[in-house]
Length: 361
Image 1: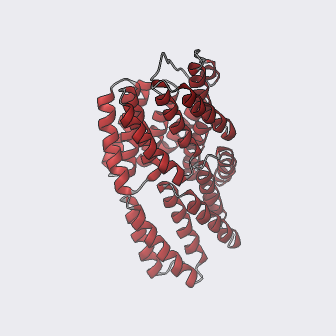
Image 2: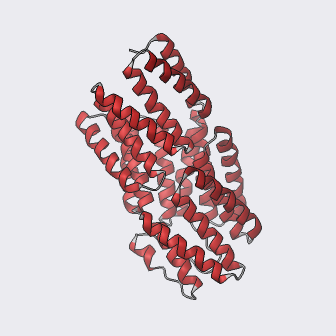
């Protein structure tokens, strides 16, 4: 049982988390954890550790996130709390996914899904389907990601979870963009944005603004794209989310690249690269390398461009990032005077690239 003192600290942390005040929420969760351990209240300690893992994961501190989940697994196993073990295992998978290990993520998430289905835990099933879809997207299985996001969407609809529906719409928006369905992507993100505004969900609102910006970017409306990215950036900086902010910076850089403002693009790519190094996100670093390579190519520095593209392709193959490998392969072939688009077709992705600068989705 959670004592009233621990309970108050935990409730305070939950309130702060709902307001997207993540650093403050972490302080309260840690206070509650400390008291739980002192009072030898393992159930409370596990609950605190799961929340600490979740919040650290959301702000991009994947190492601390994984440590918290691993501790939760150990403690939950000792007291026979199978549900908490499944929750923490899923969280560990997502933490490793943030550092590029989508294979481990799929393994852990599928194990959790099996448990939730056995227990008929509808909330667990819905969340895990959403998490699996995101992992498939990173793998490069875009059709699989779209299919799984739609399953998660239906599961959250059955639960009447507006928040879950909103995050599924964002997932569908992102996967649709990669699939080349830009108008559908915009529709999904706009719907999500409405939901998050109604829920006063700062994180979700920022997430959807970034998606709206990327959809406008892919549709060639760069003014609207930059306006949406500016809104997302303001919110991400406010809540301290380094992961999502990094990708927003990359998207802004790509927009400036499309506007032939190479200096601004390079500056934004460098800022994004610095954050990706801190979060140890290999996929984000690949996107920055591709950006630097294309700017070098546009400046006539072919040798430098080739180095960037070759390194990007090598890293994408190392981590099994299929979509990013296609981008690197296409850019490399273009730098050599050809343009090979076959790779995209094999992934079921519709891409139309004519000449540099390329609007990478």
